[in-house]
Length: 410
Image (cartoon, rainbow, N blue to C red; front, side, top):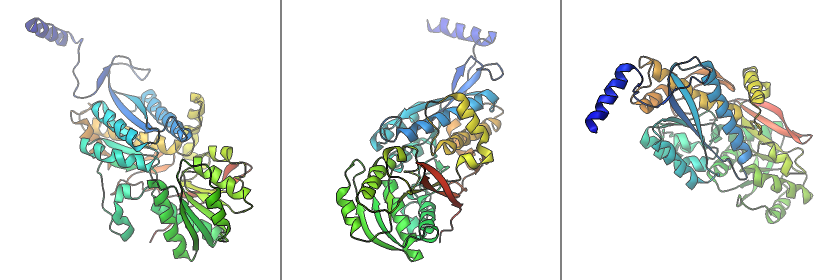
């Protein structure tokens, strides 16, 4: 049987009916991109596709899918057909860790986009690093993810060679929020709350450092459980402090009821948060959101000439869910992996290399292109070189941009 199989295999190779590849699966369909057999390269995306944060996660998945479809339609990498593999992490670190292993075990996966939550990423980074598998997050802002805890004392050290992001850090975001609230909004006394998660706690700490440096005063500090929805106890504490604003490090599912209960108590002060509350769901969950504030990475894509095609193509695809806060950043994160695959293939005589993951990782430091959200490239830590931030305000029950800048961090 073994001899007959070898004879059959040799005959098939001679006849040209079977092709062997160094890496990736064979796809006999051209998918409308020019004909011929193509090597399938899988890009994973990890995000919360169910649960409270699914509005953001679904926008991420759809935007990654659009990037993959665009690359295939344009035949962007000769001989390569891209495929997206989405996994739902439910915003849970333990699930994200399991998903990381699933991506690693699929040898066709040459890069992973995501996740949304920094706490989830903390459980994925080391497995990806050990496997040499590139990870690009469009949403993780925890500074320590790239620079370690030493960044707080000016001793930044890159943590994982495989981790990159198109979102800027909480160090930048916290400084921008403090500057906006103190200088532009004129708020000098702030009550500070975080949800004890990696993202929320880190963002609140950065805000506190920069706000007090400017001369502002933190009149109270609290931590909440992100799963709670009754905040009347902490709202009563805020009322006694004379706070002019509440800064919240966390995400919109808790921020919305916190804000409403704050206003219901008679305190006509804004709640401000980071990109975790910058979602269309926030005003839907909060009947008294008017005047609340948020910061988010980059300019709103609707104002960027570079995003015009992305917006048009997203609409044309007919996705049920909006691209939300991280759509443009996710498209760019996915495209950065596609660009790295292209560099790896071009550096290997037009074929996917046998050591494809290593080749893609090596190529990431060379990636630079004009993306949806601006010029995409990465610094020595894997952080985006684009540090532009925008402050938003709820007006007529929707987020409206107020001010954009690239903050300076001491």
